[in-house]
Length: 168
Ligand SMILES: CC(C)(COP(=O)(O)OP(=O)(O)OC[C@H]1O[C@@H](n2cnc3c(N)ncnc32)[C@H](O)[C@@H]1OP(=O)(O)O)[C@@H](O)C(=O)NCCC(=O)NCCS
Image (tube, rainbow, N blue to C red):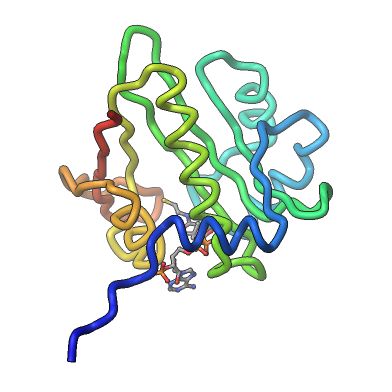
């Protein structure tokens, strides 16, 4: 019997849209919620409030948030651009624990790819813990290809995979 293909990113995006999830650029009034989400999502290597504050005002950073019903912050993504470089870097992606598995990460990642394309980036890269199965699966579904490994990349000594995607 043929096995069914896994759900496509588009289907997850549709699920997120059906759940009323929208992605927008973050503003200063999101700061408390961004910092709270960071604390709940990462054990180390966290962005501080001051760093978020700077990134909100920076031309070389883009902070996106996913929300539903216009107030709940369900997820966030941080994207960096470097002057003179056509390679954008997805620095952070997080979904609130209670909202995981519902397409929020997929919706954020789709918005990240769109934003990098609009900025004229020719590629998007990221690093992910080698033990982060959920994130790896999400990135591979979205066309990212593994391109290297960094030993002892994180504060706790864990290794990272490097992933990248060429943007057409
Ligand atoms: C990685 C992360 C952003 C995914 O967000 P999400 O909103 O759950 O993503 P989606 O609902 O779009 O689902 C993406 C995939 O991850 C899977 N997934 C989500 N939560 C999972 C979990 N706890 N365990 C295993 N897989 C999980 C989903 O099943 C889905 O895979 P599928 O399409 O094969 O079914 C989220 O798990 C998270 O915030 N993790 C903590 C922070 C983190 O590790 N960020 C990545 C740093 S590089």
